[in-house]
Image 1: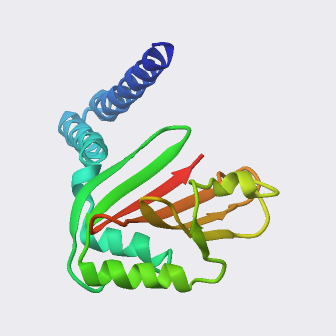
Image 2: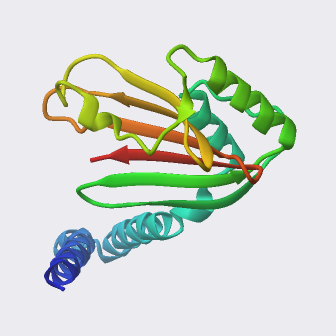
Length: 190
């Protein structure tokens, strides 16, 4: 419960700062005898803040097929046939994550499974899930780690790479279901 109140406190502080900026945008021109200009500036600032808040709230609804294709291309996965976005989520302040699930065609599924199986270092035996960040010698610098393998339920392609000292490393996972025509993408910064 303590973390909940912490986030509420942060939200209240941010809203107060935004309100203060809008008020200053109105008050300074008003003091100089330009009340109309103050209203215009305050209106523009308030509209900008409202749009920022709405963009954050509706971020999941502003995720398009082109965004999915771009994220998949970063992992050398291309969808040729049409697909449907089943879900999209992102969040976290300290540990960011972005996850989406797609309904894909059987042809794309088979082709991607073949690509994963043909990848260098593919492990043919069924494994439990791996956690590539734990296999890295150094978290903030070093080589890019890749894994291609299968679990009991899915085929997986994973990549982990550091972003330099002081920056959170990137960990991306693509899972292709064995039983359904579904693909799951996960991008984790922790």
